[in-house]
Length: 244
Image (tube, rainbow, N blue to C red; front, side, top):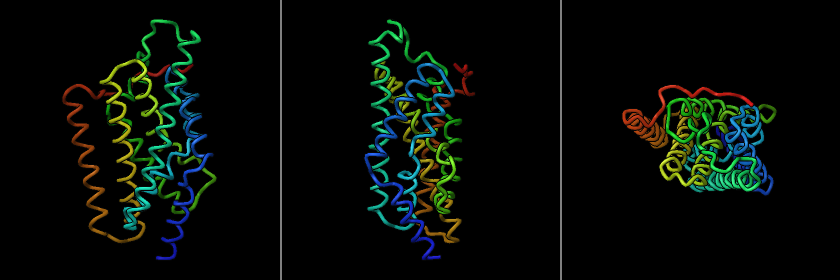
């Protein structure tokens, strides 16, 4: 089991390396996410998720916590932050370019899009995707599966939220920018928490500290969403989506 664990950890660390290719893919994912959100196009948004290698760095955080390798957890968080930051900046620049070229008519409300609205407010629907993405993504990485699109689910919970926060910043809406960033952080934490729990189950070990971290993350997320829901900030149901 120890050798298998070490192999999986080494594999995830290799997949989560900060490389030019990773940054290019994340940047392009941000461009497509920006176009998809601003045009309310599901196919384009899904395309951005397919090319986004967002899962390995986030999973490395969970692996680092479970294996008590703080340096690896910090490295995963740093790589994920840089990638998601690149995606968000790319989404902002995409929106700005569409404005300058009048693809988006002057005076258009950038945030008046159903797909954008769901991703600038903390809600249960996005967190459910993060939970699923964390579970299946970590399981796939432990089995070294590279021939599937499992990471798309995790990317769906991360890249659109970052892109939406960037677009809200472009629209100079501080509250919605904060909402998008908060949702991004909550989804990130949920993927990490579910990854820790999955790894604990797979290893058949119950290490107190990693489990305590996972439980604390989930509890904090639930409290934040309950507060948002009680104040009317969280949507009660997913918005109607029209494809284009």
